[in-house]
Amino acid sequence: MSNSKGTPTYRFAHNNINVVDIDRAVAFYEQALGLEVVNRRDSEGFTLVFMGDGHSQHKLELTWLKDFDKPRYDLGDNESHLCFTVDDYDASFARHREMDCICYVNEAMGLYFIEDPDGYWIEIVPAKR
Image 1 (spheres, rainbow, N blue to C red):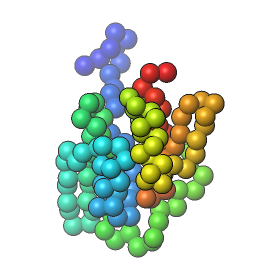
Image 2 (cartoon, rainbow, N blue to C red; image 1 turned 120 degrees about the horizontal axis):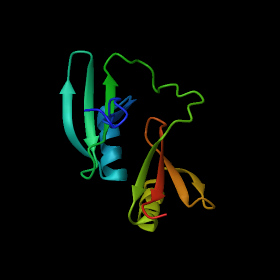
Image 3 (tube, rainbow, N blue to C red; image 1 turned 180 degrees about the vertical axis):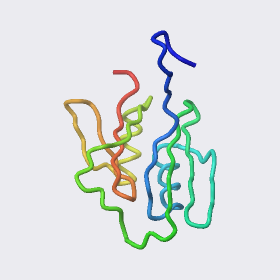
């Protein structure tokens, strides 16, 4: 399928992050963001877990490399992040504060970030801005 300019049409399918402990990562994304496992692929050298929000077709792919032997991935100066909208910002903030995973709050912009067990930041913004 092409758009009106004759170029292919692209749609987001998924984003991937590598994790050190697949079970811990899945549990975090289930508890913190309500994501659900929609597909899992186990192979000899790695496991892929695709998680969805139940509303969009976009997925988060968690990759566990079975022979990765460091305690943590080096994210360097990585400024990339995931972003989720939430329908009840105050309840979300309270839940994440209780989980002790809030790592940055920007009150002026009305958003905050949580950090997953592997050090990735996730931006949380109200659905209606």
